[in-house]
Length: 90
Image (cartoon, rainbow, N blue to C red; front, side, top):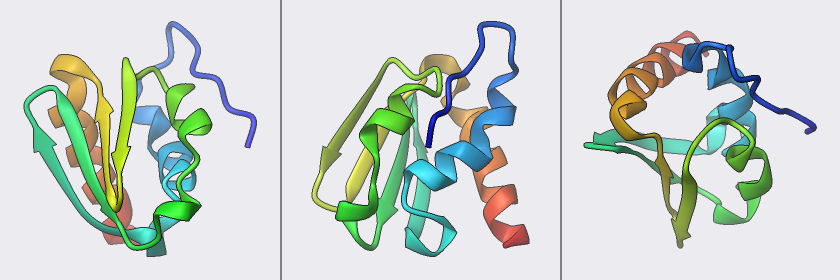
């Protein structure tokens, strides 16, 4: 996936691309806001594309096993809520 967040694009618009970078909706087992990070538990870590996730305006991607942390600062809470809403529709 070739995705690049533009400077003026709202962070809420990145959720569909984020889901793809995390291996698709069926690969996401759990989401949680951890202060400045969006914590996602995935089923298959091999499906995570860190390069795609890094293009989505985050400060960094940390992955250890099935845990993926996306550092978004103060926006992490809002992004996590939008991610949950998106996944509920799937």
